[in-house]
Image (cartoon, rainbow, N blue to C red; front, side, top):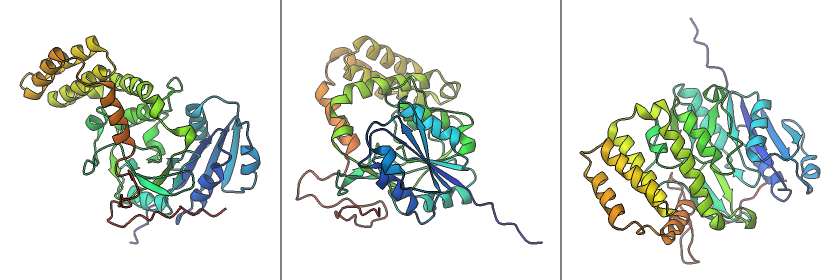
Length: 341
């Protein structure tokens, strides 16, 4: 009896955009230039007032443009989800680019591993002209969790936006439109409660740095939103099922981050909660005592270093720095990324 081949997964790429007329065509073209072209590319124009509509008019199927009044990027992504029909979803910001084989490699994982729901990976940082600057990751090299990552995700968000996710894993989940930042972290929080993740060992996209998307001036506000999402972790039944040491570790991280913001009372509360959750943890007691004796130890300068390290690990600090290496060991060129128009 002949075995039937598994059904081919259809893919929807969702690109929310607002006043990115200079970049959105390149983002769309990077999806069209895939070695495995997606079945549909949905661009949600969130009420742009520049030339975005004219730029997008050049594209035909499988590109589909949806217009809405300006409601914010979460609402635009949610509109894209409502419109999408693919078995797998890829989110792409309109100033970023997909690596040429990004979809093919990740679809192969989902088709061969039915237990995997989300495939994520690093991004190569590029400047406004498309020149690679480093590797964008939200965790230290070597720390690339796969499988059940819920406990790791409770500490910090390391899933970058161009992740590929099965439609079934979303199960009606949407971005929280009340969050101005860290809305992606909040979505992955809920997805991770019941899903398994896979880390792709080569960069999946290019993250463009330009004047309008730098985060230096937003670092404190971003950390405030990050703490709000982490607080939501603690309210989840899934969090209560974690081993005591994992819960204590999350409380400690939360306490330290509150201290960075100068929230001394909250910091002490969560550090005490960590020690009570896992009293056998020497690290928990040590961190608690450190906070009680030196509550201002983790200063604003630490927060700024944290932001720089998180966003540009492996980036070039000067002309003498070597080009970043991809996870596969291949050298990353510093030539501008060429995208056909």
